[in-house]
Length: 542
Image (cartoon, rainbow, N blue to C red; front, side, top):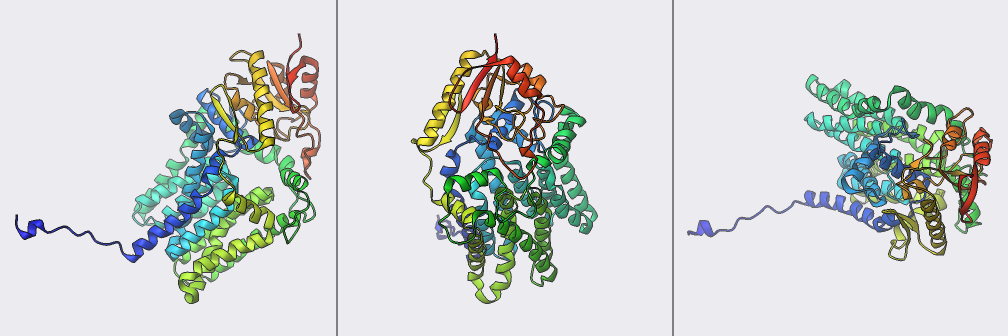
């Protein structure tokens, strides 16, 4: 073999730009990885996560959201988690992996949208969003699921010069609406301008993608019927529920209207952190979100740098998300919306700053945005974000309840262990009193006030059939005058009731008593047979 044959092949070295791109993805990935173990093992007893678990598992048993069980969102998340359960098995871990996938899609979309202004700006925008959303864990919330699909779709639509990429982006925007109906205006903000400015070929691909993304609505419509679908996605959440879940607008700086914020205020006692009181922090976050959104619109109108259309679209999406915060300005809803707004704010600060600070512009913008949020809300942003990134992962010392092939994480510490003992006692008693196929109802002792519930019992008792379509307890729905709850209760074989939400207090209609007939059915038909200090088990009186 000659010298030419022995000569080694030299691969081209990665350029500085390629290394910068890899680093801009690696740094946010590191921030995602830090709290991941803790997020996967966190307690799963909230009504919101339990509802995702139970509704998705119910689909595999033939119980469809909207038709057979109450579901207040578009059905995309329930179907996606059900598909994951069918493929990988029904578990909290699988549901949270789906939630992680949605969050990764969201962060990828943020990074791709901001990449137009440099890899450093893209990385810092993604880190800002993750810092706000990380304290929520990995629950497959319909809002986060839809937002992840929307942002990823927007990035592809704006980058999709070849048409095919834009078609996939439009499909993701359609799927975002299939996961969360209120994201419809935001999806239009992305797709409609792209349609109006496209040539015939690209427009056809955009329309094809959008129709493909929205097409699951048609399948769901065929399965559940138009009336059930309309009631579940529109009538129930907007007209029947709203009075019992809305909060004062603007928030009262002297009173945390949200029940769990009030409970947190009570349990933690006086705050040692400097700055505003906790209720005032919520009000400050609300006004900061509103003013920041207005400022982004002004900046978009005056934008003279590169990527004007892209930044204007991002600002328009931020505007379209604001109604989510207006309908219930609680800390959670404000952060749900703010997780996108902070990313756009990082871009808005970093781009003009880069003319002077250059490579330091993006980190400075990130520090200004997150530092400003921590100063305004040291408890609701600073403390929760700090704890999310610094608390040790859940390990073998964490408490879980294992029953009938299902594992439910409870938490860590003596209090969590005590709760787990009670839950195990309740499910053991229910197992003893029932046979597979019997009907179970879980709710409050006072069924005239259905404000919250322990939906996780349905998940731990998969051999039993929910006696009511109301898996969640929501004011104005389960306790609605003339509703179907009394009839459903009469068919139940076992009830698990609790009084631990009797102290529910919010400045809305949830404090008013609803239909008393369901409570009368319980009093006249069921007898208390066993239970714990927190939960009582009732069966039909003999």
